[in-house]
Image (tube, rainbow, N blue to C red):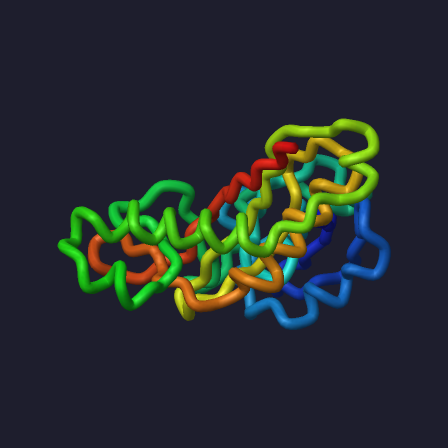
Length: 205
């Protein structure tokens, strides 16, 4: 995630930008939609905002930043028209699962567990225990986090837990090579939605 400070004038035009943490990310703001101007006591004013931009995703978490720039004034935040924020869910009514024709032929209540077993078998069949981890006697569970998109592909892949000695890298390889697509997306109220998924990969000698 990158954080950007921006100053918007009374016409909601970005006058200046100051990137925090990730140099060069200013370009990400160039494609932002036209914004309604911020207001102070009913009058359009310059407003400083902080925008959190998540990798490869049009999610804008905007909040007011006091003294973001010398000319910034406190007031109503500039607002973006239309549905520009895409929410990533952590828990939904129907969680995403790997597609398997055999599992989908089962009763609905059994499909998720079947898909989990198919995924576990694939991990076991393709896992290569890192030589360094073997030599150092490293065991444990690595966890790879990613987002299952509405098109059945995954994005924002990252290792959030690792026993070390190459286990995290191997777990990520498994995900990228064997689970990058072919998912049945999660659903909330009957609608496909992006869902964050944590996949544990066990390393045991």
